[in-house]
Image (tube, rainbow, N blue to C red; front, side, top):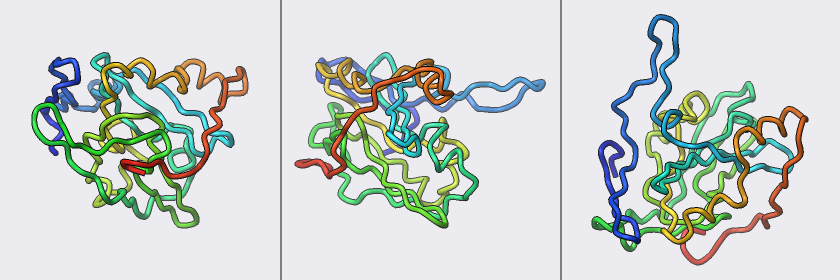
Length: 203
């Protein structure tokens, strides 16, 4: 499914726009112009116990969530290049305006596996909802997941059910608290999720 100018209809019948990529991330007179994801989406963070596998969920006010790697994830913060990104097989693209019969992901559902020279990382959804898109660009240009993680290197787009759109961030941490935590200046609750595949659906 193409990203630009795509809409879906949420469970309550409202028209929901996905990503609008007509604003470029570029330099003008030495001043950085924010990408669409940075400008219009609120960052929430899933905090891993060791800090190496933190994720960022960028949530729009309309409920759309974009899953990407945190700036503190070992892949992004480390020195190694990304050699390969394997998207999870079995993704069923939603059909129709209401995006019915799509793949439903749960918190422990695997979205992809990221490979560096020395290690592989299994990336899980950490939120529940209908999987609208997996970023296929990562298979041909895996470096994007490291260098453009808040823009073209996003992993997936997920639409929580309308009644669960606010609940989906309950296990996540706001950006300010997350950054203080990673600087050792604040404590946050680290979710204790069993590391197993979720079923049924996209487990």
